[in-house]
Length: 346
Image 1 (spheres, helix red, strand yellow):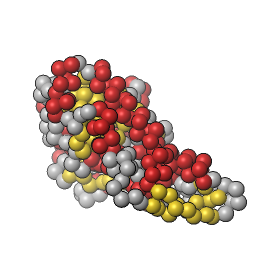
Image 2 (spheres, one colour):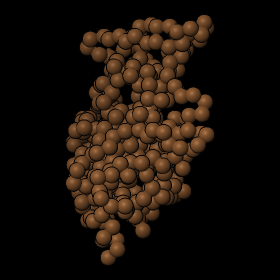
Image 3 (cartoon, one colour):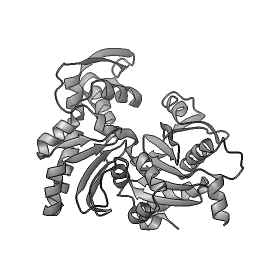
Image 4 (tube, helix red, strand yellow):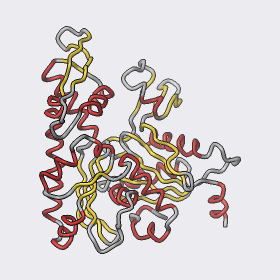
């Protein structure tokens, strides 16, 4: 009875706890938070100064006593205390309009498939410490497929490639379970790092993560563009130590990220090779689905399709797919019971 009362006093949440961004879905309201997974902390007082977008703007610009922390690395909690504070901040933000001191929601969280039991427990504990009364864990690929309204419970194969910030999740799903899968530490952040390394090696210029991401979004592509593009790159000359600007072409940026694109494609092929023949037949017929922010890289769907000879479709609104999937599960107890990870509920 007390649990029922708590349920009425709080909004149940679906959370995509991403390396780059955290999205929060509120039952009945949709996605209400979509902010960077960054927390700015005053190291002298241990006080949280900013969370999310405001903290992201501080990355690389803080004085010695302020640290902008990214508490998740490749989908794994690297700083438990900061992750807990970040989740508590988002949960409180969702409940700020409720006239109650008690906010104890049920929470569904999407996690990478390769997490160990200890790492899963860390996610669960962080959410409970942040105020969740019940925590359910679900694989990100499954959440993405559910968010894209794909038929995950039917006796047919659904292949989804979810390219996030820290990990790429490749999965073949059938009858409410993952049949074959691969979790790669090659995703959006690696594309950014590829660009930073390329510009340092080719031009002796050092640039930051935020600029690398902007370059990727502006001119990044997996296949040649119909109209060649250029972008101005400003950074620090490693020889003189002074600011320097240059023009970089889409061809150069494509060359920079190519090895990560190839890595993702090679692993998709590996999964296809280990998938039962009946399911591979379904995939060839229905196609492969791309989700996550990485799905927005120009021409990536075309590059994968050319390499695998399978039709590739980008799901609607790929950035919010996992969060939407966790939200659907909040209102579908039957589906939640089928797809939830064993350790993810009490």
